[in-house]
Every structure is written in structure tokens, then in C-alpha cells.
Image 1 (cartoon, helix red, strand yellow):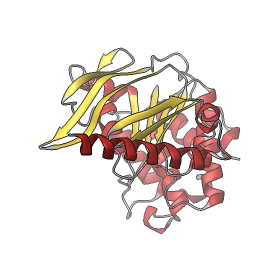
Image 2 (tube, helix red, strand yellow):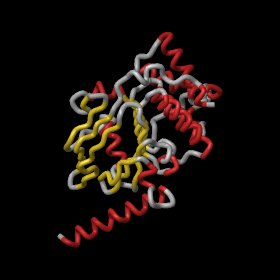
Image 3 (tube, helix red, strand yellow):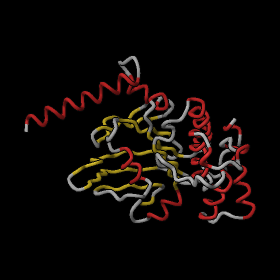
Image 4 (cartoon, one colour):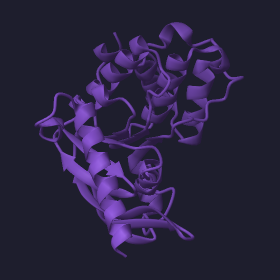
Length: 263
């Protein structure tokens, strides 16, 4: 099974907390993220859920040092994502919704390429190649072109390409979107193994059953964080997390409508 291989040996020793303080991001007149603050301690697994267009991808891109905030600050392992952008990038692994695999390269060649870019060579290169092929259950498919993989296998290869750098922090943007249930389960076995080894994981998801796996959930809507709590606390008083989420989003929309009518 994917989780049977030993996770990265140094994940628990690297500094990997995330501190977001008063962060906003504007694109002209559009505010995509507004006054967001939260903290993810080292080794915690936190989910980001919410409506489409809420600002989740923009928020994750700022944490991954790909986009500067318009206001506020973000620190990863104590490093500012703007002032120490290069240092932050060395500390994190970021997997966007559409990871850029090379379709004409094989599974092994895709991994070799990212290790070439990362300057990983010699015995360490061989160790990591073997580790992440086995950890992602891709060892039997090393000679298959990435373009010929199933959706779930492509996602696992994308994750292996991110993990091969052995980051302290893993940031994932809807990593299991469109993936079949079996592959989703295997993907989560991999993530659970990494988190158990001490890796900090922040991910967005459209699947609320994945949200139930988290220690904490951040609920985002209309550019703001509506809730930051354990899944059980968010679900309290409702029959399901989905019902609780719908009620929160509808309440937020009603409050916004009243505010607009009053102005």
C-alpha cells in the first residue's frame, strides 16, 4: 500500500508553521482575499473549504510565495513570503489544481527532471527516486508516459514530484478533484503518512469528507474566513458537515445583503 514506505526522515525537524496576519489581495477593484488571519502550527493538517470563487486559490498562491499580498504578511517557518521568497520556496512544496507534468516523458523521466532542477544527485537522488515511486505506488509504472496515466495516477505523480524535494510544508490546491474514489483513498494514505512524520499540510478541497480528516477547517466565503475550528465544532447542531457549511454560507450571504440594503 502507498503508506507502507517510511516518510521523509527530516520532515519533523524542519521548521514548518504558517502564520497569516491581516492578509488581503486585490486585483484592481476586485478584492479576492480580505483581512484573513490564521496560524497553522508545525505538523498540523488543515483543510480550506468554501464556495467557488471564495479566494482559496489566491490565498494558497500567496502562502506559496507565488503572489504578494496587497496588505498584511505571511510567514512560513518564520520567513516572510515577500522578503525571503527564495527561502520560503525551498521550504515548501506546492501542488496547484493542474500540476505541470510533461506528458511525453515517462513517470521516471518526470521525477528525474524535477530532481535535475533541484540539484539532487548521487546516492541521495537514488534514495529519493526509490522512496517516492514506492510511496506513491508508481514503481510498476516507471516506463509509462505521463500522458497515458489515469487521472488518479497523474495526481500521484504530481505529488511525488513535489515531495521529492522533501519540503517541510505541503500546500495543495484541490489535489483530488476529478479523481476516482479508490485513487482518492490511496492519495490520502500518502498524505496521512507524510503528516504523521511531522509535515505541515494545508490543502483546499471540494470534498467535505476530506475535510473531516483534518484537525482544523478554515471555511472561506466572499474573500473572508467565516470559521476556523475543528470539523466537529463546525458541524455541531447539524446532521452533517455539508448542512452546517450551507447554513453558514447562506447566513453570510444574507448578512451581506442586509448590509448592502442599509447603505
